[in-house]
Image (cartoon, rainbow, N blue to C red; front, top):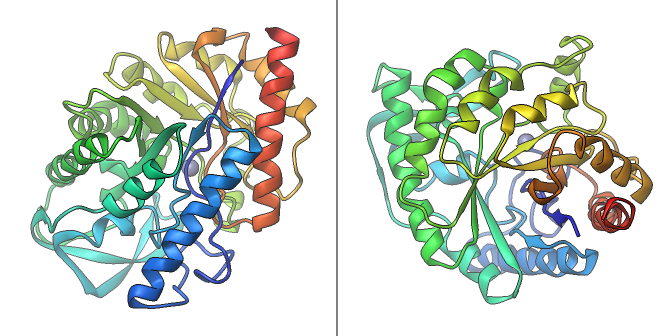
Length: 339
Ligand SMILES: [Zn+2]
């Protein structure tokens, strides 16, 4: 049997927030918002279990965005005066908060949804945090004046929250580092070190998710410029293979990533993307099993985890539900074929 998990995010129901957006506005405030976040989290826990997934997540229902959800609990950041900044090497503009003073956590960031998820499933749970390099690429620096120094400061805060999540009963802490696929040299040079600092002292399973981004137009346009072979992973995988991180997530289905790059992750668990997040077309179990079969040429069975290419946040809820089912059914079919 192949293990199954999602990358992280799932669509927010229309009663919680605006749909089909990466930075959606909430539909309620105060206690009503907290209740709506809890209800949406429980809904997705149930739907992931019903689909037959093995590892369950909170679907990131309680945070507005995967990076800014963390930053909201950090002191030293000015959210009042956001500035427009080109992010992911100017692939698209975002309104980002500014770092204006030494960074410190105000308190716990994700205790509410992590404990809620833990209380409502017997399965393993995975919890996602943004990686230090990706955070640094999603805020404006008016204080540190040095990217690496600021990344290490964020890594310390991430580490505090990660250790607390582990104490909450989280089985897998995953850091999302889409920036690794944009700044490949820097990722191999200091990005992996910052990541290891964020994961320092964790005894639960640790993971990193590296992708080509959500299925939004700016990312689709960017992917069209990357040519026939996407070799970005080639630079950072050797550094990750030597690192303390246990699992690495990558895009596979419908991507132009040469599958043999997975060989560079020898010894690691590989979360193979078998579900496309940039298309509403729902994969068949046969397609999912085929992708798993292809990955098996380069990843030993015991190290292969079937996963989505990226988060499903901006998708239609019904499409996302169908894709979860395709993921689980495809993994079952693959177990029959290759087991
Ligand atoms: Zn992603």
